[in-house]
Every structure is written in C-alpha cells, then in structure tokens.
Amino acid sequence: MESIDSGKLIKHLAGIVPIAGRPLEFNMPWHDAMMPLAANYFSIEKSIYECALAGCETIWLVAHYGTHPILRKRIGDFVVDPKSYDYLKRGGPTRLIPVYYVPISPKDKKKRDSLSWSVLYGAYMAHRVCKFISKWTIPERFYCSFPYGVPDPYFIMNYRINLSKNNKTIFTYKNKSVKDNLHVSFTFDPKDYFSCRDIVRQRDLGTWKDHKLNAALYDLQTVYKGLDTEDATMIELPWFYDISTWDGYREFLASEHSKIFKRPKHFFTQYKKRIFLNEQDGREQIQSDEQLSQDENKSS
Image (cartoon, rainbow, N blue to C red; front, top):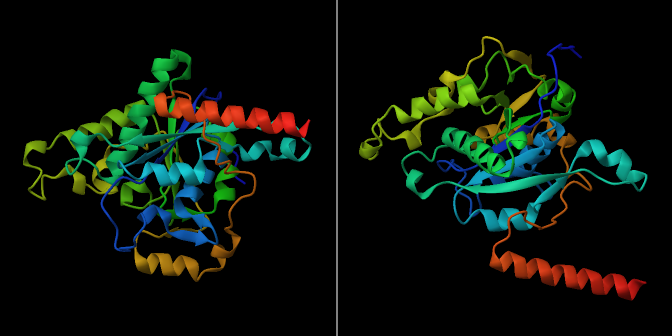
C-alpha cells in the first residue's frame, strides 16, 4: 500500500452521506438509496459503513422530509466503530459513532435540492450544530460517501490514518473523480465548501422553473469544479461501480466483487437515543430506560 506523509491528525472528520436529490431511473416503491447490495444490506448502509471505516467521528445523513423515520428505524442513532471490534470480542467497551439525520431545508425544495447540494448542506449543518456544542468540536474536514457509488470499502480503510491527516484526499477510478461526475468518495474542507456553494448561488433561484437556471438539476461535475485539487492526494481505486443507473447496478450484481458485500455484524445497533431530545423523544427515552431497569432487576 502506498504510504502518504501528510502531517498531524485533524480533530474531527465528519462523514456526509447525501441522498436528497432527483429520483433515479429505478422507479421502485422505496428510496433509490435503499437498493440492496446483498441480502439485508442496502446501499445507504454501505455508505455509512464506509464513513466509519474511513475514521469519521460523526456521520450526517442528508435526506428529504419523510425519509428519515424508516432510515432511523433501520440504522439507529449510533453505529459501532469497526476499529473497536477487537475490544468487543474481548468483552471490552466499543466506540460509538453518532449518526445525525439532516432534513433538506424547505426553501431549497425544487430549487437547490440536488445530490451535489445535499453534500454541501450536510457540511453546513455539521459545522453549525458542532459550533453550537463547542468550538473544539467543529469539523476540520468532511468525508463524502455516495450511496450510488460502490468502491472496495476495505481498500479505503487502509487509508484511514491518511484521511484524518491534514492533506485532502480524493479517490479516483480510471483517473476520474467527483469532478468528472463520478459518484466516488472524496474529502473537502471549509474553503472548498465556499467555492462550491458560490457556484450554486451564482444562478437566479427565482427563475428555477427554467431548467437551465434550476440549481436542483446541477450535477456533480457542475458544482464540484470548484473543488481545489492542487494540493490534494489522489488515490486510484482498484475497482469501482457506479450504480446510479440500472445498467450499472446490474453490472455490479453480476461482478465477482459483489460477493464480498454482506451486512456487517455488530455495526448497526438500531440504538435510538438522541443527544437533543424533543418532548416525544424524551418520553420514549424515559419509558425505554424504565423498561431496561426493570429487565435488569428481574435478571438479578
């Protein structure tokens, strides 16, 4: 494996998983990000698992209103850091990674809510929420994983340390990256956020009905031409499948690489405990804690 010397570790790498955007050609009764990659394993779960393998301290899932309940029921509010599996096998503590569910702003609906904008909005909300908690928790870099791109997740895990260092990392396949409209993972910093955000803002959103001026139709190539790659580390993936089309999805399922994908054990906890509780969540949490306490008393 290639060794990269890239300086000191950053304090907070935030994972962004965008699914709010224009519908794809699948036309299924479920969301396009819930296409199965293996038995009981969805493409969006692959992206969350990839963020955890990459060393993200938090994961931010960006979707439209109404999509979050089924995803939260499936995933929960925390996932287990795969690096802590060894401690789990020895009966030790595990490191939990919080998953935040970010709804797209209503003012962006049909105006900006493309997949490319979802990445930027997720980064904005991650910065805003973490800044509210403490200035020491503000993300210094963001790692984006698209549910519609399937790389070798364990190849990315080999670069876990490098992704958490000061250099910016962009993955490529056949010398193409997100700047070439490929759903491949990449990291970006706040400077890149402002550059790409200004590209979306440069059009008059008041004329969104005109397809040429509708920012909701912007593809990855249009928005992420503002991504600075001059000082970035480019890493070529050994294999990659773009499953944003039916032909690409069939190509992945028919490949030998699809056999390595299966739902990871002990990763998805389905544990629901929000950090910021509303009234309904508070009541549910109290009932859950009381039931857990009663079960422990019976067992003892």
